Length: 317
Image: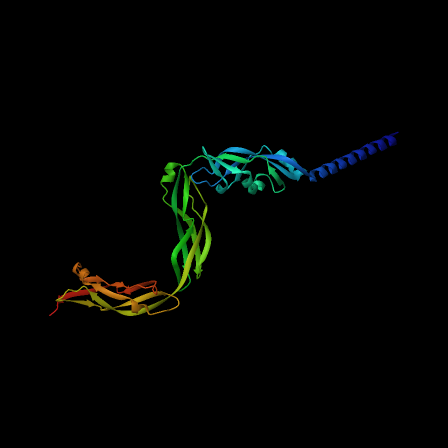
């Protein structure tokens, strides 16, 4: 009798295991099957609309007919009450008044995976458009200032500063905080041994308590090669009236020219140094600054040594 009872118990257990295995197999089969169903998601919109809060004040339910697996449908039903935030470009939102912005079902196509999943395939949305409300937010447009720590290779230099894009940003937040901000600085653009044009992206330093319309800016730095040449140049005298003579010392100066590479022409031939007699008349010490003119495209910059000379006016006999 005990042996018969044991056999019966073993048989029941085997049937139970078989039933469990078949149930799991049936469940797995159905989870992997493809279905066409209507699913819904409740979302808040995040956007970059100028002068508005970046998160919509309302949520909207979006429904779509999709083709997907049973597994996705199961997981979606388990989390269908969970709200999510989806970024929608301001280019896809149309103002319809009263702080409402509308996105069409056609424009929604590009956000399908963010709203639902890459595991589902869209058949059609169940609405023609969706509306979100973006409330105005206090803001101010300010310039972006580049902070640079750049070491150039020998005989290379910056040619025109740095170009930023965007070169200004909108600051959002409490009026008292926003109104005191006059500019936004970049993080330090730190480069070494620079000898060619440089392009990159740099993050912006966000002051506390505010929001920026963008978090980074693209920068472009033009770099040029140059050479330096030093020349001794004669100092001329201008505007001396008849009957007067202006004596200067020294009457020559050493000029160091910084010019674009390659060397084209002698820059000293196109630059004149001079002392203006009218400036001498206003000088209490008799010292006058040496001036220069006729700067050309063949010259980036120059330095003069000495920068002043001693002058003495006497009657011309």
